Picture 1 (cartoon, helix red, strand yellow):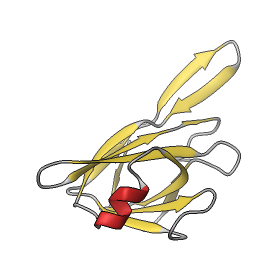
Picture 2 (cartoon, rainbow, N blue to C red):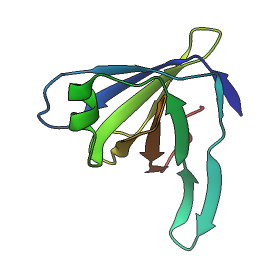
Picture 3 (cartoon, one colour):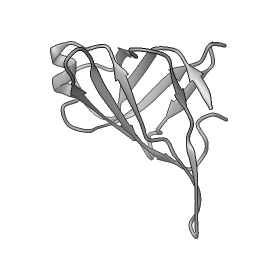
Picture 4 (spheres, rainbow, N blue to C red):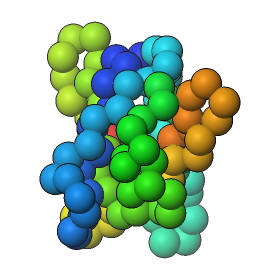
Length: 115
């Protein structure tokens, strides 16, 4: 389990309005991928819901439907962690709330993003 900074960088796979989006988490959060074992092998479930500061209207519109992306987090020692790859991207969807927004991250990876 890692405690990560409040800056979340989202790089789209494919064409979108921006080449990189940056969102601010409403608070520090923990990231703990769950290990799944099956007959196909081991995978890491990286699904996470993160409360973020309300993004701009255009960014909310861009992520009103799930988008294929690579998500980057940074921890307190300034080490970067990536969720999703070009081959198996993560999906991100943002839902508006009253005073914030909910960033829903879904991804299953073949290798732990914390390694």
